[in-house]
Image (cartoon, rainbow, N blue to C red):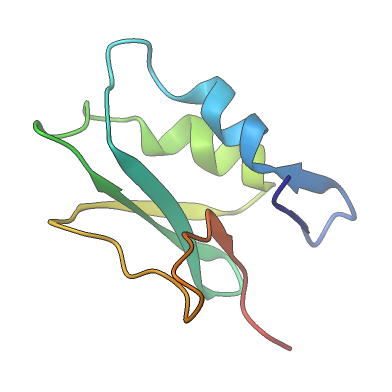
Length: 92
C-alpha cells in the first residue's frame, strides 16, 4: 500500500484517493506528484477528460490548504524498476 504523512500528521493512503474519485471517472492509471509544500499534480491516463471539480475532494483528503491541479497525460513515467508510483511526495 502506498502512503505518505501529511503536514497535519495524518497518514494518506492511495486507497483514500481512490475513494473520492467520481464514479463516472474511468482512467487507466493515475498518480499524484507533490510539486510544492501545499500543491500536488494529479496526472492521469484516460480516454476522456476528468470531470470538472474532481480535484477538490482529492485536495480535501490530502489535508487543509492543499491544492490539486489535474493533467491528462498520454502516459505516466514509471520508476527505474518499471513500476508506477501512485503518490510521489517531495523528498526532504
